[in-house]
Amino acid sequence: MSTADLRLGVSLYSYTSEYGVTMTLDDCVEDIAEMGATGLEILGEAHVEDYPNPSSAWIDAYYARNERLGLTPTCMGSWVDTRRFPGRAMTVEEATSQLETDLRLAKQLGFTYLRPKLGVVTSDLEPDPVWLPSTERVLDLASDLDVIICPEIHWPSTIKSKVVDDYVALIERTGTEHFGLLIDTGVFHAKMHHRTGGTASRLGDGTARPPLTPVVPVSDLEDVMPYVVHVQAKFYEIDDDLVDHYIPWEEFLGVLVRHGWSGWLSSEYEGDYGVGRTSDQLRRQHALIRLTLEKLQEEVTS
Image 1 (cartoon, rainbow, N blue to C red):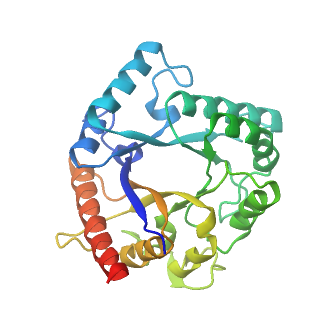
Image 2 (cartoon, rainbow, N blue to C red):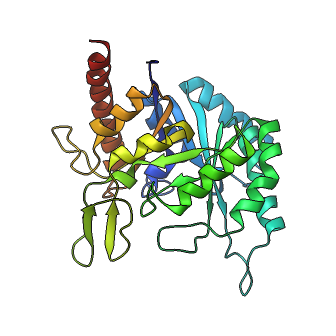
């Protein structure tokens, strides 16, 4: 069994409630470094000044800050807005152009992964059909730039679903090494966070649909591990005892360790907001993950 190499990063999305209100971009990035994280994930449109054409001065400052703080760019979020044009669908050519723009920007800013978000056509987040031909058209560019495209498997999508089957089929048919899966750990939440009434949760085989909320067994992850390239470590609340009552971290991390998976766990806080709360919760989650990984690694080597 190979040894897992799991590195901790943070998505700037975690600071949504404070970014531009109580914290600047510099404040957020400084906070990420201060907690000991080494990976930085951003949203292109939200966090890049004058997106998609930042100035040379902005880029120079961005690289200087990352170098000073010891941060590695990990994943850049991209938005392919298939509903951009009122009264008509986005064409394959338009979607392709957007992906090309974001791939080049991701490369320019030193990111390894590009996470495209497209409009969806089903309740379990099946992407607009334009995703397939547009993605196929940019695979050569992704290879040339060495940027891996990784759509997000996000609740209420499930691992046993057409969404994931279609992504895996593309990988297997083309043999590409520049397309993979991004797993959002919110898929595995055991119960809803701060939601009451109107929604039910249950464990099952991944076929539940609204009004039932699918709760996916972590064991489903085993089947797709060869295709997983990045993890958004979604969470909602870590209590004072460093316990997460929503995401089964030991079980999830156990799968990664057993498979010897190497990559980034990019924290994405999506719980209650309040001044300073994101920063505190991120530190709690990183402490929980580090302690859990120490325990799992000891079990593997003992």
